[in-house]
Image (cartoon, rainbow, N blue to C red; front, side):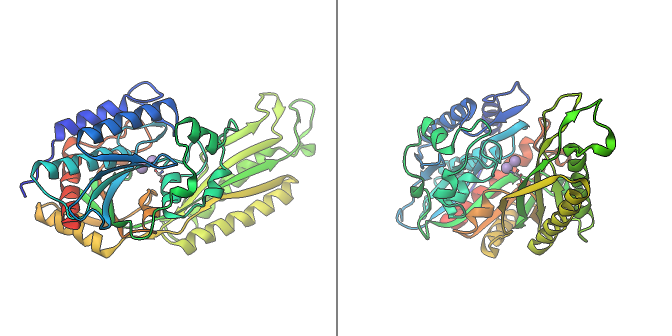
Length: 412
Ligand code: HGY
Ligand code: MN
Ligand code: MN
């Protein structure tokens, strides 16, 4: 097959999608089921239909765009990613896997490839943990990693439940319909920017992911005593923000002293109540994101943080409540799919390295229902989740070419 990627159209589509945002360019913000997200979904469905794909959406809004193969009843080969974006994000995270997956399918159509197994482009709902506090909502429900009942309990910070938000967005079917039947996919391959500096540093154009780190996220509520910033003397204070600050440094220390560089921990949100310059903080909400490629080490980090939490609460006479939002196992990618990606790289004379994914992706959950692997392309300085996130047209083109070759090998 003389495969060729229409790089110019793909880059133009990435720019077009980036402009559908709640923020001014070059910033991309596209929170799940926001007006921008719904517009972006409609735009994308139009692009898929223009490519001749049969499009359906499930009860949580996962989008399936299918190129039906000659053995339509056979398990499909899936590819895809997400188009939702956190606040103040860039234009490539997730999008490269969605629009790149669409272009991979179009490039196979252009050379007259006829799939035996259908090839299906998937756009997952809410890969980012923004609105409902947990990431990979769509792929968790697809894979059964989250029950419809648990999803039904989710609500956003304004108190709007997932149920009412999804129904207002037009998704009326019951969530129990989302879970995929066994054997639905023969394989799933996700193209994504690396979101790290390794490929660029090693000057290698492609990374083949062999495992995806184990993510966990928790919420902490620190309760102290409020009061007048001038009148309450220091010995009488039970300042919730000072206690939270100690906990944040204990979290950082737990990651730094885990014995491996693979343990990472982040406090990304710190809400202070009442939040007045002359009022002692009485309550603080913190979020913790802690990950590791090794499950045991990640859980040991969580235990170390739990011990520090008890010590700080006792010493400062504050309450510290924790809620585990998710604590997921890591994913091992399927050697068969890893090999298919390696073979596709070799076929096109492209160097590649095997690597772990420190970011999580929908493939983490798709690995529970199909053999998966991921293909990374470099992003400048490893930057991601920021407006200056950048992947070159040439790197995107190489990723799509290898993805198309791999899909053909798996669906042929
Ligand atoms: O946080 C992550 O790893 C992903 O980018 N949502
Ligand atoms: Mn992301
Ligand atoms: Mn992503």
